[in-house]
Every structure is written in C-alpha cells, then in structure tokens.
Length: 227
Image (cartoon, rainbow, N blue to C red; front, side, top):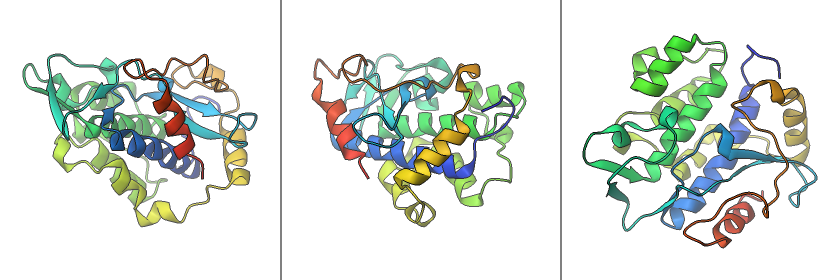
C-alpha cells in the first residue's frame, strides 16, 4: 500500500472484528493486554494453521491480571503514543479492559487518517485533544462514531469489545476466507515502506506472548478468533 492513502473501510472493519474478538477473550480471562498498537497486531497469512489471513494479538509482556473490572496501578504501562488519559494522570492511574479499547481506537484512527497533518494527529495521540479528531467522510458515520467513542477521554463511556462486536453494522460484514485474502492481498502490498505497520508470518514459538509465565492464553485467543 503506497504512502498517503488511507486503508479501505472493509479492511478496517475486518481488523476491528478480529482484534475485538481477541480483546473480548482477553477480558473474559480478566487480563488487560496493556500495549495494543500496530506493531503488536500481526497478520497471520494463508499459510498459517487458520488457512486464511487474520489479525492476531501478540506480545503480552506488559499484560496485567485484574482483581476486578478496573484497578489502580503505580505507573503507566504501554507505549507513550498510545497511552490513555487515565494512565497519564500524575496520581491514581487506572487500568481495565477500556485501556485496550482506547489503544485500538487510536490504531484505527491512525489507519483512517494517513493523510491527516502530523500536528493534528499528534494532538489526538499525545494530548487526547478530540477537537482535532478528523476522519474523512469517505468512511461511514458508524465507523467514525465507533472510533470516536473508543477514544473518549472518559473511560466509563467507551464501549467494550463485546459491545462493539454486537453493532449491527459489523454483524453483516463479509469475513469469509475469500474476502479476507482479497482485501489483505490488495492493501498490504508494499507495507515494508510503512514502518509503523508490521507484516510477518505468525509463529507461536518465536513470538513473545507470555502472560505471567503462562504460554496458553495466546493459543486460547487465536483459537477463539476462528470464524
């Protein structure tokens, strides 16, 4: 995909679907990934055991096991560019499944705004300034509204991954192997030229995905993603 061109809505919806399936599963196990970003979202190609392209979540090195629905932590975790407002506080830093939703929202915003001025994007990423939030009207109002809700500064107003998956505009989309192969084949050509997005073959033995020393959660997540 050449620089300066946004990703298509069908591809973004496939990415949203796959990642939310993973986040839903993670949340059900009371975990927060803590570092959802493009570099930790891998493309499992048609040569993998899934037999068709899909997005999978990797690198659980910053994951956190919750005692409840949310928890206060002493210091932020994750990548500065993708930190949620509640983790940027000087005191009373809060983490929960809403943290991963925020990071995914920023990732989708980035995919939809390749042509947006860097200064405006930085205002959204680093300052959480939604007055600079802009996604082209070539995308549906449903998608634009969803992404804006995902990066709401108030974490209590963000939808959960499970709630996003129940949205009518996502339920009817084509997630078939043929459609996936077509979309990924067309839009990820030349991705080597875009350093923030990583394309690689998934190999569970070489991807660091441990959670507190456990190796099983990653397998559970990938199994849950089979459509």
